[in-house]
Image 1 (spheres, protein in one colour):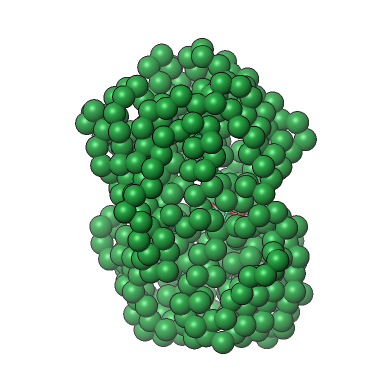
Image 2: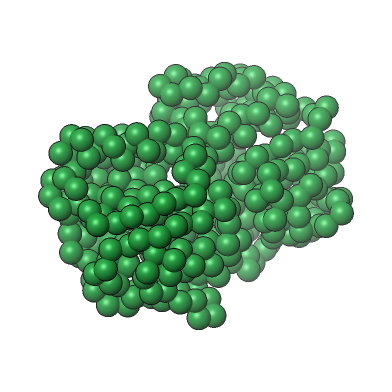
Length: 421
Ligand code: S3P
């Protein structure tokens, strides 16, 4: 395929969730430009409305307005977080500091995902959780007065870290969280600093002092680098042309995939860098490239966790064996991504193997052909659809509609970048 043009990708999912959550805790009105309007973002908006915030409809191109009441209010129905782990875990932190019970649930995928990773430390802070299984939704949060916490996370996770920082904010207490393997995304820390909270990082510890105050804010959400990886990969696989993606978030805790793909030989350049609302933003320009295998180390994984399905699909076209070290966390994403990546590569005639928590992918020149099982996982669906743009590929993805969880208009984008070539 010939690739070409200049596109934008949907607003950053992590930042949209955080903007919605913080704005709902503000007394007054906040205006958010560029917000994501995907299914996951709608899940956050829906539950925050139930908790007392006035949130305008999420529509492409519209400024999102959120008017909070200073605190959350007791909901009169169960909070359905849909497919969104970020909504669930971050909200649990906020609810831990509120003196009312609230029950959270989600879709079949979310109800399978582990919650003890946040309920355990939040319990130590003073919240109580009830439900049939303490590790699985539905769970009722009984919040109240919180105490300070020092917590060593078992895995480097922005959702756990942010949940505990949110509890620190809602409860007005100090929180210190240790990240064991590499830095996970730091959007929560950056936003909290903007609100005047003292947040420091030292030797893997992130410490929050409740010195700030949530006040009305305006914000512009950049394009989501985790969505940008798909058109970038399509450009890398193309035969000729060049694709520019403007206004993408370039926070260094999110751009690990650019470094890894560059190491594999991909031609990607970041241009027009600027700082916007405490986050680095710029353009990414990608060109067709020949790829060679690499080893992705354990410490790099938190910085590219959501991009692994796409990098793995690209690794099937690279010369040699690509290794992803310590990617066990992929088993508890929207699907068992580790199992699905390997199974789908095999189903397409490629070579992949999971050994312990490591993933090995051997590149091949043979065209990928076969059926991809997504189990409704948006990133699996998009990664293999992009692989399907190879000239000789015959890939049937069983559910591409699920892309709407994070990337509304994904199939149209794939057509656009082609036809412009
Ligand atoms: C997210 C953190 C990551 C990521 C998810 C979004 C966030 O999850 O996979 O898509 O916005 O904090 P973990 O923190 O569980 O790794």
